[in-house]
Amino acid sequence: MSRFLQKLYDICGVIAGVLILCICLLISAQIVLNALGRFAPGILPSTIPSYADFSGFMLAGATFLALAHTLRAGGHIRVNLVVSRLSRRRQFLAEALVLVIAAAIVGFATAYMGALVMESVHYGDVSNGIIPVPLWIPQSVATFGIGLLFVAVLHTLVDLLRAGEPVLSTPDEV
Image 1 (cartoon, rainbow, N blue to C red):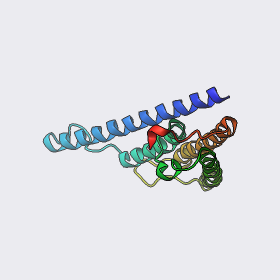
Image 2: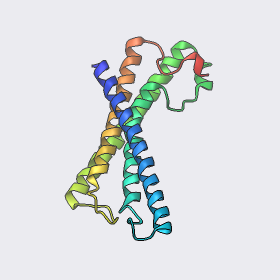
Image 3: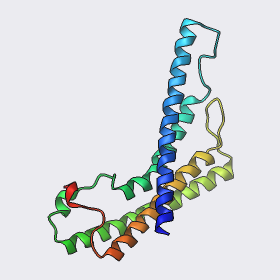
Image 4: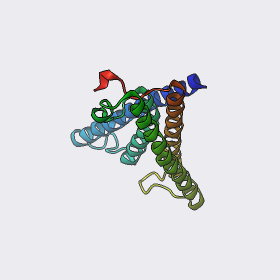
C-alpha cells in the first residue's frame, strides 16, 4: 500500500509540474497574441478567452496536487532549530503531535472543500469569465489534492509510529 501511495504522490507531483508548464505556455501564447495584435491587427484574435481564469484554475490545481508529494519528499518548510536540540524521544513526540494536529486541520479542510464542491454542484456555480466553467471542476481537483495531503499526513504518522523514531527531520537539514 505504501508503494502505491508513493506512486500516487509522485504522479500528482508530475501533474502539478505539467500544470505549471501549461500556465507558462498559456500566458506566453497570450503575450504573443497581444504583440501580434499590435503589429499586425486583425490577423489573429488578440486574446485567449478566459485565459486568466484558466491559468488561475491550473495554478490552484498545481498547488493542491503538489502538497502530498512535497510533504513526502521533505520539501515543506520546517523549523528544525528547536526540534534538533531535543532528545530523540522528544523529537519523536514532537513529530507525532505535529502530525496529529496537521491531520486534524487538513481533515477539517478536506471536509469543507468537499462541502464546497457539493454546494457548487447544487447551485450550478460557474466562473464569471468569457467562458463559463462549472466551478466544481477546479474545486474537485483542489479537494482531491488536499484529500491526498490528508492521506499523506496519516501515511507519515503511520511511518513514524512504525519506525519508533523521527522520520521528518534529518541531521543534514539543520
